[in-house]
Every structure is written in C-alpha cells, then in structure tokens.
Image 1 (tube, protein in one colour):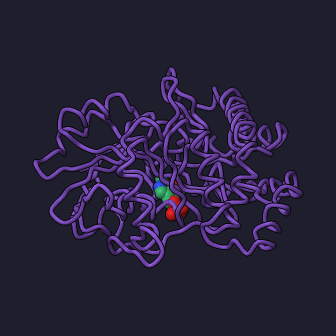
Image 2 (cartoon, rainbow, N blue to C red):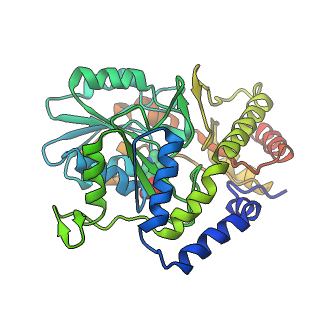
Image 3 (cartoon, helix red, strand yellow):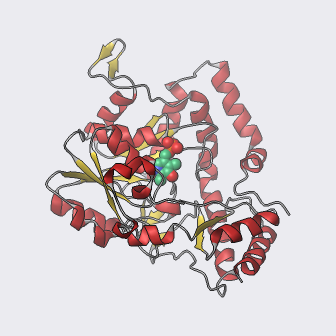
Length: 366
Ligand SMILES: *Cc1c(COP(=O)(O)O)cnc(C)c1O
C-alpha cells in the first residue's frame, strides 16, 4: 500500500469541475493579478472568519512581514516568537529589521509556552507572534492578557490552522491581526503561493493593503513605498472554489485524528492532546517516537510517507547561529526535535490507510 503524506491530486479530482471553471474564468477575463477574483475571495474569507477585513497577498511569509510593517515594527524593536515553527515566523521579524526573541514550546501542545513569554519581555518588545502549530491554537487568553499588561501587539500565525477554534472563537479573530498562508499543502491551499491578512482594525487593514501593493492609494498615487505582494487571480479563484469545502475537509481530518488516537492509544508514544474547548484541525498529526530515523525508514519500506515538523528548532538553525543559542536554552523544543514524526494526514485518507499506518508504526517502535 502506498500512502503519501498528502495527496493534493486526489483532492483536485474530487472538485475538478469547480476548479477548472474558476481558472477558465480568470483567463477569459484576463483578471490575472488582484482584481475581482481576489476581492471575491477576500470577502468570502472575511465572512467565513467573521472579521471586518481580509487582505489577500502573495504568500504567508509576506503577510506576516507586511503586518509587522503596518504596525511600524522595525529596527530597535523585539518580537517574541515560538522556538518550534516554520522559519517564516521568525524570518519576518528579521526582514523588517527587528530582533527575533524565541520562547520555548509547551511540552504537550507544541505551541508557545505562555509561562515562558514574560521573562523574554524587555522595554524593546513590541509584539508576540503565536503560531497555531499543527492546527492547534496557542493559549490565546493567556497571550492576550500578557500583551495587554505589556502593551504588545499580537499577530496570530494561522498558516497551519484554518478553521481551528479556541474557546468558541475562530482563530485569526482573537489577536490584533492574523496571517494566513494558502500554500498548496495547507488546510486551505491554492495551486501556487498565496497568503492573506485578517484584522478588525481598519487603519491597519488600510496600511497593509497599501504596503502589499506598492504603497498605492489610487492609480499613480503612492502614499508610501510598499512592495509587490498581490494575490494572483487564478489562486484567488481556486481558493474561492475550495472555501465551501473547508468545513467538510476539516471534519474529515478531525475524524482521521480520532482514528489515529484510538488505534495508537496503547502504543506507548506521545500522541497529540486536544486541549479542552479547542478545535484542533490537524494540519499535521504529530507523534513523538524513539529512534525516529529507523522508524521513518521502516514506514517508508511499507510505502508510508511521513514528515518531520521540524527537525531543528528555530533557535538552533544555522540562520540563527549568530545568537549562540544552546539546546539548553530551549529544553522542550530541543528535546522534542529528534522525536517528532508527522503521520499522513489529509481529508481523503481512508480508514484502511490509517489502520495500516498504525499497524506498521506500532511494529516499528517495538
Ligand atoms: C507555511 C507557513 C508559513 C508561511 O507561509 P508561506 O505561504 O509558505 O509563505 C508561515 N508560518 C507557518 C507556521 C507556516 O506553516
């Protein structure tokens, strides 16, 4: 049995007519950049989230960076980010000229450990970027309380958590602003790079929209220097066609996760834990296994593809060697990075496939 890590082809085949129709309309109308298809997606996604403003842009890394710029965070400022994430979360801080400050992971939930944030705050701290990692929300109440106490901006990195909720609230609507990635493999993915920003703050929305489009106010009227970070019409049309399926795909992921959890409950490995009152949308189903390379290799021999998110905690990447961090500075993230293993997870996965993965995993860890 071959079980890919994700199967974007299968998803396409199930919704081919809507996708093809969307792409064809963009071509027929030559609405290639921004324009009516991007606006339609912005409106649909804003309505879906229940937020006032969504600004489409080129990718989820740009959306983080543009939001930092919109809040005028730059040289001399510090931004706190989790030690375990995709590099975009920290990269955006450096690209605006601010200083990255890492906080360790929660030992069970993998998101930023809220008890490790306050010790990282200095008079220069301007913002926190919590990541709703693997599809599970960070502890937003605690984060918003810390932010309020220290007058900090909170930008939610929602790249892995479309449709997740936290105590009844949709993620992306809790912080001051939120960043989404629509990279193809994300829970809501385009067929190329795409991203988006969300906020209820009208002034920030206006700034972000300007920055993403050359500082433009109107035709040949540039209020500031911005950049080119617009969404392609084709990506917008694809996302608009896919959005109505997000809920059903999310339900499928959650169901698959339950099957994994029940099959693996006696496997003696650390399984994902869904905090009370959270809707974990399982962008990734991450377990911790001993002698991971061997386990991964054995699964591969049975045709099972797995991933690692992430093999090196951000502070220990070469990119941050200049900070001279040691694994001991982030004992949780550094202690977990050799054990994390992401099992196949996508809506179209079947019960038989999940059972097969679990059976092979259980024998591989013995
Ligand atoms: C994917 C991802 C991003 C960046 O998104 P791109 O669209 O690939 O630029 C940012 N943060 C996290 C946590 C991600 O997983």
